[in-house]
Image 1 (spheres, rainbow, N blue to C red):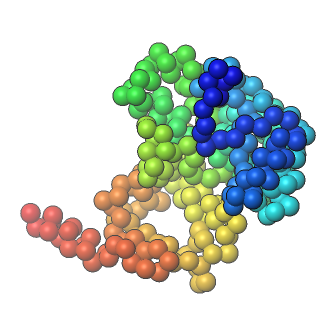
Image 2: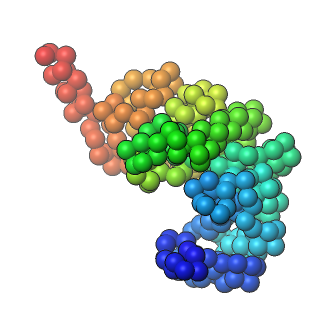
Image 3: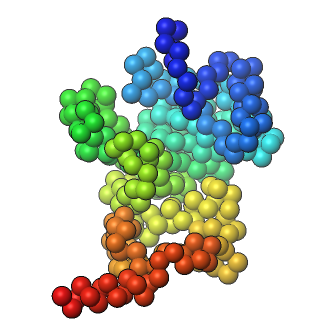
Length: 277
């Protein structure tokens, strides 16, 4: 939104601690579970690139204080090093991106690793660099926006957070035209290719760590008595080739809350027919 161009979106505009206080309270009154703050800019924005920090300490702190009082979580869009530090310092629960985190920011995140989660949203960067030409994002646009640099910086930072044992989750920024919903599982391979995770470690990020982030660690993310029976039976071994998790044809069984949505016997019959042909 600009002064000459008023438009609404899924975001609210709030400037200063008092406006942020009101915005957060309004969101909570309306029933939200998570508050997200754009604490840094983004290279898609003409006047606030990714290296800019757009909040101050008192603004982030007031949002966290109010949200936590009501049992809600706070996430931040934080690309710049300073925005990462603001987020850690003031109690943010989940920090997205972080690709320009410096050594101090990495140290702060490591010190808070039992409290925070990181979401690299690497799928958007990867697809913007390699798969967005049909939407006008040519190689020239990619270079102008610095997207290839951002992808390289993301790989560098998350190799380091992996070594430091900081919890990282799969997904984020799916829902753009070139990152359609339902393709989030591609992140598993990105974690292996870009961040140095093993396939098993990437799968844990998508299951157990996700359950922890959603405050459902006692019922989600593990195959264990008393946990929700959300199960996939996969044709193949994702601990060897995690890319098969993005191939829906490999899902032999789908179970949600103990209810069968895809029977493995049907998959077996299809496989038998294909073999017979």
